[in-house]
Each structure stands twice: as C-alpha cells, then as structure tokens.
Length: 612
Image (cartoon, rainbow, N blue to C red; front, side):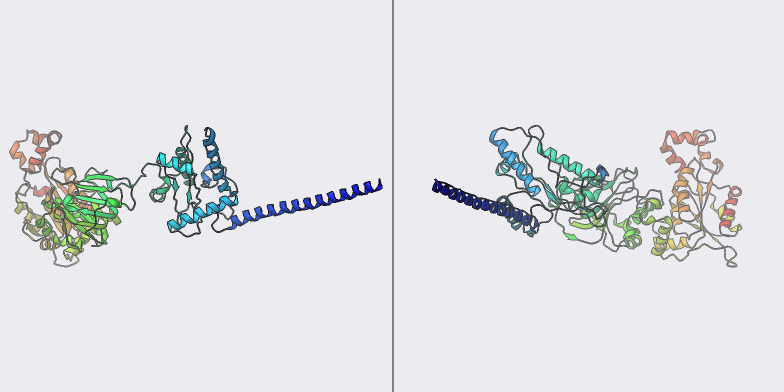
C-alpha cells in the first residue's frame, strides 16, 4: 500500500516536471517569435529604400501636420495617407481576389506587410529602379504594384496606371511643396469608374493646394503631368485682335518663320499643347483689302516643328508695306512710327521680315531702317529658309494717328522720343528755335509749305509780304518727291515757324526744333476734327507750339464754284452725313485758299509771341 502511494507521488512529480519544462519552452518560443517580428518590422521602417516614408510638407511652421485642418483652404495635399476605395459588389473568387488586393495595398501604405511580401516589394522596386536608370534611394515615390488580374483588366480596358508627377516649387513660389506620388488604377466599380473617382480626388486636392485661387500659366505648366484629365490647359493668346485698326502677335520662345509660305510658328517645349491659329494682316490698318495675310500658329508639340535652317539670338518683326504707303503722312503714321514703337526697345538687335517688299520705299527711308536694325532686311515673300528666333512680333501699329500713346508703348516711348531719334538719324543740329532779342539782328525764320495741286494758297505773295512786314525771314518751299529726305530734314530744322494748309506737307513738322511753331490752315467744310487728329494733337505731343486757323467761306474758292446757296456751301455737315466721297472730292480735294490778310495777321503775331 505504501509502495503504491510512493509510486503515485513519484509519477506525479515526473509529470509536473515535464509540464514545467514544456511551459518554459513555449514561453521562450513565444518570446523569440514576437521579438523577431518586432525587429523585422522596425528594421524595414528604418531602411533607406523603405516602402513607406513620412514626408513632411512645409507650411511655413516647424511643427508637423498632426491632423487635418478644419479650414479646407488650408488643407495640405493628402493623397499619400488617403486611400478611399468605393464599395464593389462582386461574386465568388473575383471578390476574394479584389478584397485581397485592396487589403494588400492598404497594408503596404500602412507599413504592416509580412516579411515575405516586403521582400517581394523591395525586389520589384529595385528592378524598376534599374530599368529606369534611377538611384536606389527613392524618396518621393510610393509604388503600389497591382495584381496580375488587375494588370490584365487594365490592359483589356486600355487604362494605364495613373501617374501624378508634380515637381517641387522653387523657393520664390509662396506655396507648400508637393509630393510626387504614383497611384494605381485599381478595380473598377460598375456604377462609378475608379478613374472618375481618382480624377475627383485630384481636382479636389488641387483646389485645396491652390487655396481656391485660379492656377496661373506657369503653375499649369508644372502641373501638366499631374492634371492629365483629358482637357487642355489655358495658354496665353498669341495675338491681340482687340483693336479696330491693327492686330499684334507676340511669339515668345521657339519661333520659326517660313516666309515663302507666309507662316510664323511657335514651337512649345512639350507635346499635347493646345494649338492656336490666326490670319494676320501685318499692317497698321488691317481693314485695307490689299494687304496679304500671314498665318500665325502654335503647334501641338516640338515633334511637328520644321527643322531650322539657321538660328539667331535676336528677335524678328514681320511687317507689310503697301497699303497707303507712298503718301508722306501715311509713311510715318502707318509704318515708320509704329515700326519705331515695336523695334526701338531692342536697340538695333532685331531683324525686319518684310512682306510686299518695296525696295524703292525702303531706300527712301534707309537711314531710319538702319538706325532701328543692324541686320539685313529679309524679303519675306521670297524667303524659303526656316528661320528660328527667340521671339517674333507680327504686325505693328500705333494707337494715335501720327503720334504715340506712351501708356501703351514699350518703355513708355513718346513722340518727343521719336523726334529726338530723327534728329540723331539725320544729324539735325538745332535743339531750340530762335529766341527774339537774344541774338541782335537775327530774324525768326518762317517756312511756308507750297502745294502744287489742291488746297494751295492763291495769294502767296500777299502772305509773304505780311510775314516780312512783321519781322520774319520768309521762305516758300515746295517739297518735291526727288528731294533727298536727309537734306530736306536739315532744311526744315533750320526754321522756327512752319505754315501750311492741312495736308501731307505738314508732316515735315517732325524735323522742327522743339518749342518751334506749327500753323495749320484748315480748309472750309467742317474738317476741323480731321485737322486736330492728324496734326494738332501730334504737334502738341512733339512739344511744338500749335496754332490752328480755320478759313471762312469767303476765303475758299468753293464759293465761286457753287455759289452761296448751294448745299456744299450752306450745309457742310449734311454733306458729311450723306456722302463722304463729296467731302474728299471737294473739301479736301478741289478747294484752294485765299487768305484774308487782315484776319490772318493776328495768327502770325501769336507765333512771334511763342518765340519770346
């Protein structure tokens, strides 16, 4: 009996010992297992090529973003930590694989993947990095590899993985840095495509990132790969067609001209750029019919560009001659003054490309062209080269007749600047008119413009006698087309007062010294508004003293032609309203002037007063 109890106690102690040994072993096994998993997880997070990295978005403060701000305009762009998936209703194995894929992607983003999955991801990342020639240290991209089934679905649907490529802003941009991320195009929801959901996320994120403000041009360029939503981004208009007189195009960048085809192209740096196309008459009066248009176009991308025959580092300006050129006033108003406005800013580092080239006309104003450009003038219509410029302007014009509006001109150029330019071009020495009494015995000089056709003075000897009686040295000049412009400019510059009837001859006031006097005699027929527009306002802009004298019907030869009771004499305003052709034919054409010397004398006294 005692031996039986002894054997039982011995057996119990033996079982207890075995239990303790097994228990200790299980505890140690559990400890090592948990320790290995913890060490494996922390080592993976600490690796330089980790799958998940905490990326700080600078917001102007040192503290990290710990939670999403309540104000949506101040939210950071959170696509890394936001991975919402739509609910998908599928059956059987498809749902199982789909849920597994979604869970795996979320696990990767959260960093809770198993060691085997992590090693597979690391191998995939290294393979992609070697293929792309990138460094193994990928700090700004999170790649999520889709399953084989998802790849197959994407291939069948023609959907490539959406990529968001947002470059970091430079220091001068007062906006938070952006994260460069790659998002997978996951399984589709039959009710609402995943692609649409991703687009909505991107749009929402962009709106938050821009603080509700419209993205400007340079930001659109940086977001080009990011937006990729199938809609072209707005771009700056190449041509301004808002003015009723002329259009103006400015192609800044890679601009190329093909003169023989009347084409000017702007080549964008990237493909898939929205195109623009215009038909431009490169002249300052676009409503004229005889101006050949030029096609101005921006291409979709550099792959469409014709190769350069040669490239220069200065800009070009495409202009047209013709139109009303040949009329002395229109030569300056429509071509030379606008050309000065557009080209003077380049300090002769610009080339002119001329359509409807007229060598005789360019020869007449050769000194002006040479003072504006040091380069050869290109006959645009006969140019078969593809010329490449950093910038090309197409067309020209002025916002004021025979003048410059400084508020709309480059560098705020004025007509005073233009007349200074002409004095340098033609070596005009006089900067001031004669001052009465300053030089004893020196008379002020009066120049009378004689017209050989219409609107001429029929009592010229009486006018000359009046001027001499008041103390002027009077000279009558009839400008001839064959007179060299340089010599004639120096002749005009020697006078103090210019007198003439409204007409192109008064254009020579450009060469008068500053503070000289211009006297415009306005023909009968209510054309004072034209006289003021064409010469009155420009004379003031040139810093000249301007005097306007409107003749009476008794001083017009039209009175003898029609009689006092005729509508042409009795009601000029009715003629203006009914038929502009009659205005041009008679009031501006077949009319001569016989000045009333007694009525006109105070005008010359006023001119003398400006010379005191």
